[in-house]
Image (cartoon, rainbow, N blue to C red; front, side):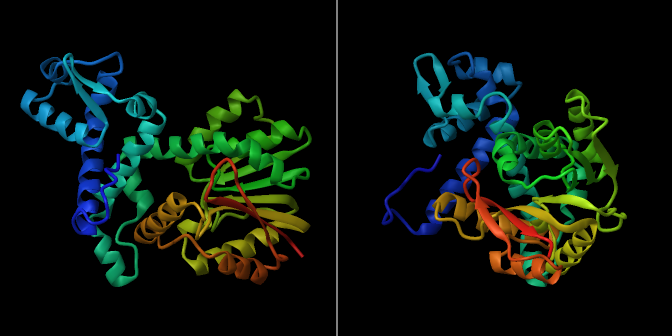
Length: 332
């Protein structure tokens, strides 16, 4: 957790050095299972090390580092989780999110300078994920969990007719929510096979196999069909270069009926919330490095939509996910 040092306590880079070291220590604690091992109460370091299968001295030094950042608290009975650690970093859920980002930042960013130097992604993010099944599982779980959190608000904004095309929504959470709310709606979800494997179970559990079709494949290549009332592109355009987005939106427009709507879910380029704004800037750099994308300005997205034949878009900031908005545009 941040130390909140006064601004005159050393150069700013020293603050960042400490924050980086603290997050790396946190990542080690998560990966080794330190916080889960302390979920039932404090433990002496020897007992903790035995439970983790780690070296006692190394474990003690890691715990001391975690104490300095308020992840652990020392006491007469050994080390214990702080209240914030117990609330956020034990079990799965948010802990898995941090495990995911720690691997991204400390492993995939190794060649970040090369991306900045050349202007091209130094890695293929999805190929990188495919080589790390556990990281891929956490990535898919993170997207699915976020969809669960915002789906009720999304469903209140998305204009719905009788047919829905969802590009890149492999977990199928949005299609499920919208079909549940609109009994006459049928949906087609297009995504890569690994992503759709997650959604297949969810669609079956929701008993919507007769109304939700899962189409594996590359939506830049597949025939998307035609006559859809609504198309969703959630967390899609930020992972692609601008030219690819303009081409995809032209294909989406062709798949919609006249008067149909496209809905994008994207991060705001600049949020009034300082933390959301900082995340968007770092996320944008990560997208550039791994996919050639970025968090795009609202005006640039509007220009792609206009080029594809859509009217002026409307923007709907999400209360359930500060720093993100739905962008809705009607086909002219």
